[in-house]
Length: 221
Image (cartoon, rainbow, N blue to C red; front, side):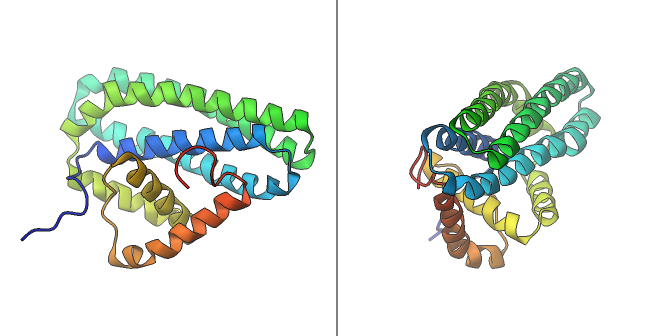
């Protein structure tokens, strides 16, 4: 008898899982900024924002510096699409910088107006990101699947996780795990130590969300 705890993975699954997690986390963060007037949640919101900002920036970096050049190396016709995605990444990085300044401003001057401004900036980023990721899934990922095997993509994902440090590994894996359960998506294969630590990481992630006042806002708690 063979036991399967997740659907089979393809080279596209890691992209889709990360994309869903980025959109959900950004939406929850923007909503928390807009709905809550309790300044006690600001340190938690700033922590979630810093986690989110770093994850999005590194996602773009991994695509621009590793994945897309590898696809172009194997499929020269991908070069034009690679350039188009790089341009979109640059636009999103500009919106990310605007949102970051707004979060810093509301952390130092937590007025209702500054919170609303930060919520608007994060919302604008997430709206633009959602359109970009949908284009990626329609146009880019099918080409990635042909050029890069699931095993190669798993190796790239493991390399990413090794770079980000133990605390962010815990939060990242727990966030991806939450999305995977909610969206019925396969998780990337985890080392045995990470599988053992995952229950603790889930609790830590929920505490971070609760500290930001967004445990029950959008998505799953």
